[in-house]
Image (cartoon, rainbow, N blue to C red):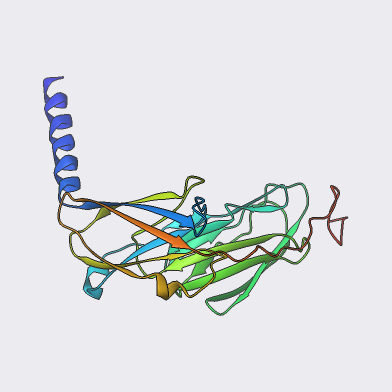
Length: 220
């Protein structure tokens, strides 16, 4: 029992030591009118490309629930895979024509046999060929250090190795180029940094959702 306690203490100490060697970045994103912005992706890209060596992709997922993509915005590290489980009682036909990833999951229910590999950085706009109002986004980041804001407009990027970064913000309704939001950040081990953005948003343009019972092909 005593040996287990010692081992647990060593593991906790190692974890604390590891976190002390990295930094944390807290971000706030608001509109020009001062309102918090949800679903904004904040990315910290190291200025030294060698810092990306060893970063590993992950397996992610975007569900279809009540004929919507959930979450609406999913940031992923380049090379990651995304599964698209359909939790609805109707079938969906998920696709994208975006240059960063063109793909199609023909009409299906449940879980497609293979997840989709996102192997090129960029924004991938998702749609459903059956339900036109269904819109989602996969933000494929060239950096593994990113986060997405909540309803309060806040996000946290943890475990940032101490070095210099360019930090930028993207949102589906952003009025202006993502690259124009870039800010320089230099962090030291154990540092807690804070940054804030104010961005203008364009009105969201969406196809009106069909009444309960389906879209233009309601039997699906």
